[in-house]
Image (cartoon, rainbow, N blue to C red; front, side, top):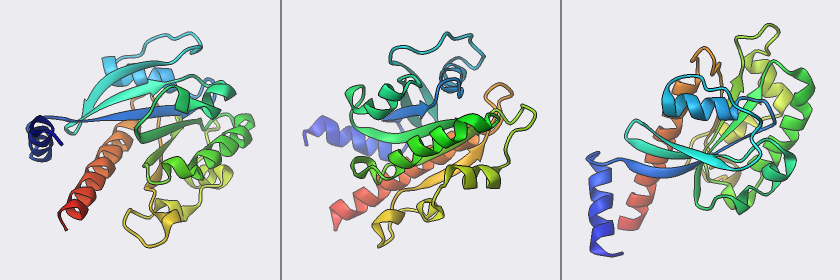
Length: 204
């Protein structure tokens, strides 16, 4: 590691400069991914056409500067996201909790992600979006419909490899600015905790 990298890590550790990380935003078509990314960047709603190509925005939460990548909701993008981004340190999976017809497909894609060995230790935030809509699923019901293994919600540093991934589901409404802020704060906490663990392991 060159000296400048070492100095940067020290400054990041003490909070003098922001930690930077790549955040992948996934989800089916019309789940609210692009709206979320624009809300985080600009603080307001922006009208979007369907996302047909990858795009990204930067935003900062709790001294972590995220580069959030939205690759679209079509299946090819969901299956081949590695072509668009490397070094993923956090994943947000957005689900339209008001659309019961899309939940089986969302369950399939989410569970494919949660069992992916390449990102087994990357924290995953599941946003149950659109709680402002009538008929929206509740949190416990959505957990059941998505088939989320609750062992995956156990924090890092356990002996069971399947439990090393921090994973949580938070209900949200991007339109009404509900939930997703807490979700991103959770994500920044997980990333900082992983940095702390890695730092301690490197010094022992």
